[in-house]
Image (cartoon, rainbow, N blue to C red):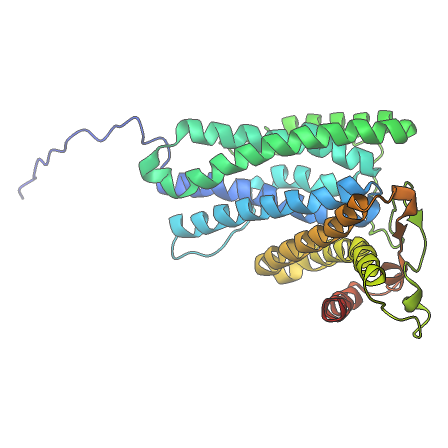
Length: 346
């Protein structure tokens, strides 16, 4: 028997840090962490009072959704034809991200995003890019570079929002700081979010103030506005005309501002059905919620331009209130029907 002595040229190369499946494993880890925050950010919308935060988080969530979508598609390419995105060895890490939703208050939730979870993703993306190259990782580098820019901006805005919330909710600041600190410690216990696999925490630390998440059945509202149930007379008086000219302009502005209920409902149904309907649904619901937040800002900015102070702007809640105590599925057709009706009438 003749043994062939086959020789090869050297295969080592500075760019060969990640093999195909290695890259897929890391990017899947990033996707799972992004997905977790997308769900928790959506779930908390109804429980956040400050209008700026309630309207800005949907934009951040949509940015995160686009990042997660790019990561997911790249994983499928790298693992073709396999289409499974199992959590697997990343379970200890994803479980820490999943805890974000169980914050004791809106302030604690925002603080943990600003100080723990967004910085973890930002650091991980930077580490990946530092070890990547344009040939093997080219298809995902654009998305990660954009994600880095977005995460930097998100962290800056969230930190400023935390300071604003601390000024109006002083009693919750210490509780929020303990919550964020404990989550950071838990994240470090499992090895953090990095290019390496996480590991179970030998003795998980306590999470002080942890409250199992429950959707806000009564939406939190910004007290700077004129809070009410019904924001326009024709809601309870069918004979009150839409009006023309200035009256019609005012009704349109106020109606758009009050689509805040649709933002909260979009977040609620994304959270409610994320596990059952999975990514395609999450992707569409995140965009829907973001679109509704832009409608609100359209009305808000128009009213401000006309010279109205916040306390002169009616902010109602009757549509969101009407689904209290009912199954989450009730909110889905309500959002579709009433938004279609408003679009047609406006």
